[in-house]
Length: 330
Image 1 (cartoon, one colour):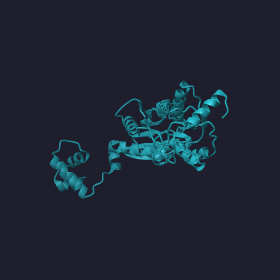
Image 2 (cartoon, rainbow, N blue to C red):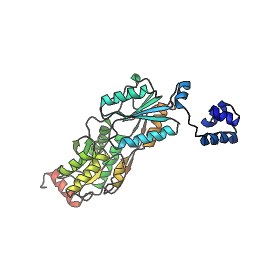
Image 3 (cartoon, helix red, strand yellow):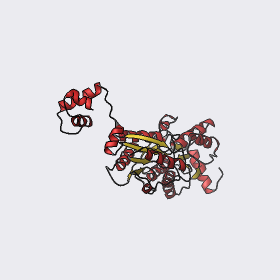
Image 4 (cartoon, rainbow, N blue to C red):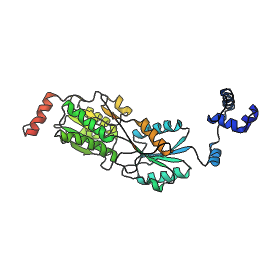
């Protein structure tokens, strides 16, 4: 920075203001400073700046498991929100365990981050009071201390309402893990709407993965089932694959819905009806709270995306399930 100042005959403070976009500099002078900085490939010394200011301009992000397809997308959304604020992101992976999450919190705090964004590992709670930097939590509305979340319950309601509107009354619900607050919010929303219509879905719990979804699709008893609502796209896409392997057609034989609108949902055949989250808005609010720009928790709306994996049940299917409820032959 001193070399730039000497070459242009200005003060070091003037160079600093031009590179940071601050101060009352003429556009012509600021442009000359930035042009020379680019020519000389000037790179700010963030470590030195941190020593002077006491801030690292670095945010920590902890995700539960990068093996799950949603979390790399979340990390990208956080990265974009951070870049818009001129800060960097250090990412830690809890590897799906509470101990891994605790270790990553200590690791990132020890590296001098200014704040921390945590997507909690399933079954854990984050006690922000015990972490010595500001913390934002992205999970569910039911999570104590949550900062930003999608309205998972309403997404479940939208899925159930869509299936009921098509005429489905015999539904298999792939609920994901029992100890997941997000899964519980989604499935509770579905069950709430189904219950109002007099429908009790069959519920199957499992870990959340494409492979498990495929296994369920390949072996589950589909007698009387006309639709499957999955709490996660990974389960739904796997389920569609497992059905195809045994010759069951989607949506002609069974309609299928997911939740998250992953890339998989758009490229599976047929494309998946699912629920889309506004990850950019969630990431922006979490970063804003972590950096002190805003306060308070927010719940973000979700959107049901209709694609080709859902359709009305065939008349024969409706008649068969009506007979089953009346005690007739299947």
